[in-house]
Image (tube, rainbow, N blue to C red; front, side, top):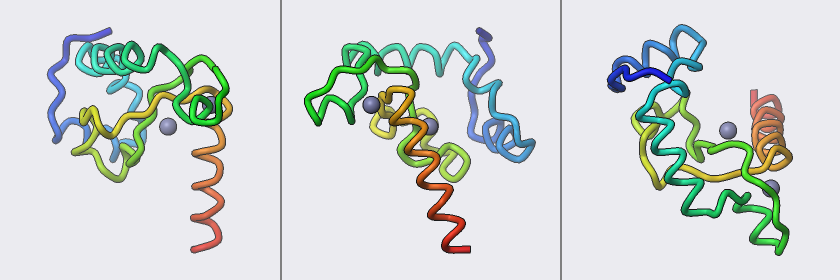
Length: 101
Ligand SMILES: [Zn+2]
Ligand SMILES: [Zn+2]
């Protein structure tokens, strides 16, 4: 974990460089993600809607970080997802994009 100050310009630079892993190592993100996980009891929100209980594997950005870097630290833009739901989310979106373009 790093104490780097997270600014919008920095996030944009990371997105441009194609590697945003540094963002996920910042204390700012880790603390926000921890707060979100705690609020959701570390469960997948989509599975819970269907009455299932799956452990949260990822705190996902509903509006993708790459497209909306300004929402990177917006609590309301976060969603706790299990590994399956997270995979589906990104996989489906990618397919949609392929169909469109
Ligand atoms: Zn799930
Ligand atoms: Zn995601």
